[in-house]
Length: 220
Image 1 (cartoon, rainbow, N blue to C red):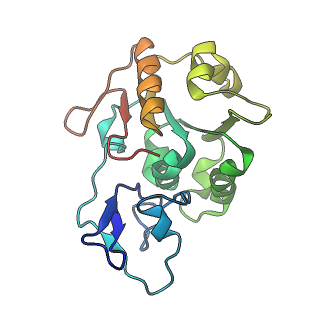
Image 2 (cartoon, rainbow, N blue to C red):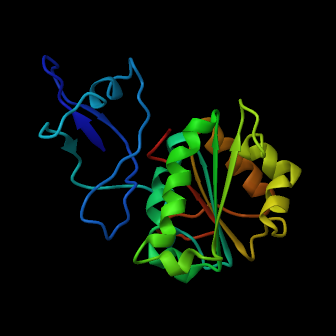
């Protein structure tokens, strides 16, 4: 949780944000869009160096590798700012040590919204920790819903049609090999979760690892 205490406000405004920086980093990165009238972002977008930002003492969340059983492939399904927790995980060496292939998908409405993820993945080749590990292991698949693009459609549509697997060059999802993480809007999470379950995957948690997990603390 991060927040601000705007001047004149009776109490701080707090919202759940996923940490986008890797666990080994000394600084914290967050990824957000600017919402002109948003309760927090209308203030957050105006902060300057030296301004005070409130940070909750304890981080929580379900998108952790320990909540998943061992597998061959790890899918990370994201929409919009839901790519934030995966921005952390794709820079963690442990991710590539656990899985033979990591497939990050990012679906947005407009092309400009893909820039953060595209630039991040492009820079991974120069990353001192995972640069050599991502080659041949990380596959980044992007799609749009409102503009023309080589791959168009919601992640749910691409899953149901099988186009996602065709583009990735992998077999259809199965519980023996595949593990899944899902982060985005509540509708996207629920819809994608329902489809993943049709492939035979079951939801896991920190206390009971299984084949897929969804972010329950963050909605982007």
